[in-house]
Structures are given as structure tokens and as C-alpha cells.
Length: 81
Ligand SMILES: [Zn+2]
Image (cartoon, rainbow, N blue to C red; front, side, top):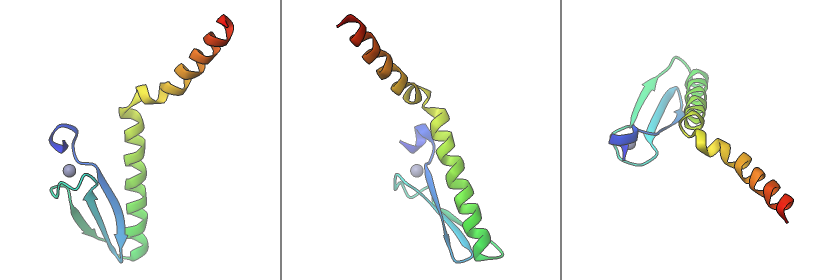
């Protein structure tokens, strides 16, 4: 799966170390990076998780359109009925 889609890492802070692990549990996308302080590690972990979530939204545009399609379907259904 990761070979096709790329890894899907989750980031978290562990003291002044930022760690990440592929959420699919493949064991290949894991890693860690040291920062000067625990606050830095946490800040970077949060920023990277946020970017990851935004990327998922961009990768699945059809999913974002789904509520609109459902709403239109209800609207059409009510007009006909
Ligand atoms: Zn992976």
C-alpha cells in the first residue's frame, strides 16, 4: 500500500525528540529528529500533522464534493415528489 500511495506518517513529540511512524504500520516510514527543546519538538510535530491533514483534503477532491452532491440529490427528489 505504501509503495503506491507513499507513507502516511503520524508525528508526535517525545521530550525534545520528534518521532513519526507510518500509520499503516509498515515499519519502513518511521523516524525521529532531535530539537533544541521539547517545545520545538511539539511545535514541529503539530505543524507536520496539520500539513498532512491538508494534503489528504487535496488528494481526495471527490470526497469534498460529496455533501454537495447529496444536497442536490435531496433537492431534486423533493422537487419531483
Ligand atoms: Zn508506510
